[in-house]
Image 1 (tube, rainbow, N blue to C red):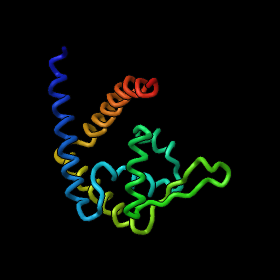
Image 2 (image 1 turned 30 degrees about the vertical axis):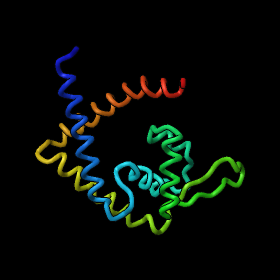
Image 3 (image 1 turned 45 degrees about the vertical axis):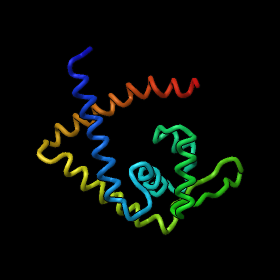
Image 4 (image 1 turned 90 degrees about the vertical axis):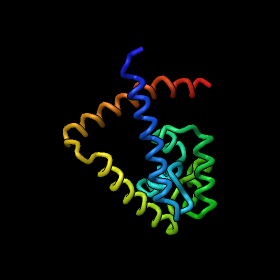
Length: 150
């Protein structure tokens, strides 16, 4: 085993936990947390999106997406509309009630990013982002294909 992996895995795990805590705390007044913020923001940025589009972009299974969308509808942040041509397709829209949450999410993104990148050169940040995207793709290819097979 490569000696660097335990440190990379540990760092990713710690960053993941810290991000969840940071976002959960920042969104405490909005009935959502880390787990829902991606979906709220995506629907805001892509009004009328479909569940299938979100599955592909966020890389989440349909059951998880369905559960999260159901919660967002229940709290009044999202509404759905049937497609005029294909009634099986539901389009998702953020409601007025969800707008303050999106604004807060975007503030948290900025604050978190600035804190995360403090003292690191923009060149190093860009290299890190590219490297992490490649790592994500490498693992995604292996994991996502297993999910599709089952």
